Length: 481
Image 1 (cartoon, rainbow, N blue to C red):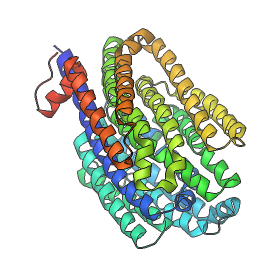
Image 2: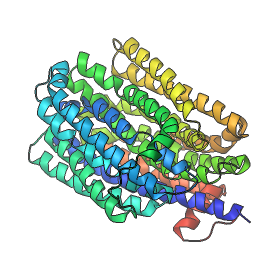
Image 3: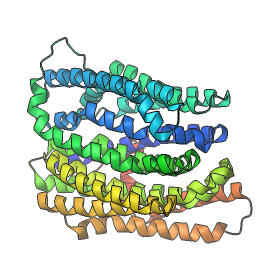
């Protein structure tokens, strides 16, 4: 009797989480197209140089406590209050530190303009910090709808602000404004929707209790931030701002797809696994259900972006065509990353934060080594190195997960490979149908239309369970066990 509500809850969380994240990414894509029309690669390169600093500071102030709180068996307001004040105090400390380090950062990159840019952009740190506790309690309670409203409204307002400034000729300041306004809107809206309100009690004992779990996540996340931004740092130091901008755009457009899936997984994965953390069989059932849904969406979305990348960028602005191969490589790497994230959510729900520390350290070292090794070969080989690391990381995550629950590689291949084969077959067929069309715009439109129609028809004719459950959810019908 318990399987039906669990199955329904998992499917609903994945579907609506994916739908809301997809809407956000579509809005972001539209805004991104507008930015590409008015901004240069150098404008993006300037902002990309600061990514590693904001990323590490964000990780330190969040401290891994969101994951620890979601894993708690009982919800206690005292825990959230401690988390709120701890992250806020840290964010203010980091902002002041980075404020005074801005001249040194600018000197490292030999970019004097970075001093003021950094000091304004780093305002996102305290703005983000005050959202951690409210967003965590909403995630624990699976308030996906409210979280979607927060993100969609924030994207619309911040994106519109940035686009208007870009049109007015403010160059990279349009990107800075967009990021700061986005953080500001999220902080306001999370406080509106969340049931959490802090008190003036400064009891940090819950932080001490969660520290042994969280500290490993902190170091793991720091290594991941270095790993994810090492290419931009090296490119910024040894290449031009234009090349940094080209690389960041390739990563960004591939991320449009992977972020949909990563948010879908993170919004549902750990909270769902945590509720059944003592039942291996049910965790296996949920994992396989989520794997099938991710495969159903990840392969057509990520490979689809790679498939239409050339035409998409050509329609917007041909000056950005050098970023297409990077985008395509990152799309493949993004698929590995999404599946790996799902395993990580399961592992985290079992309290195995030490796994993240060890694997992040090992793969971080490999990534940095690969980055230096590929530096002389150029942008594309650096992107390829990141993809290889993601693939190996996925294999390690699967192996470790198999020691926690009885998941086997043959199960995962059986659940996911049909979607990959169908996706590849469709794209190969559509390629030959459209290859002779000279108009780039028409080829772009037909590639999308034919691929979507064929995928839906094949899912329908093959009686795909995931496809039918998605239709049932749209039509608000109950999923059958």
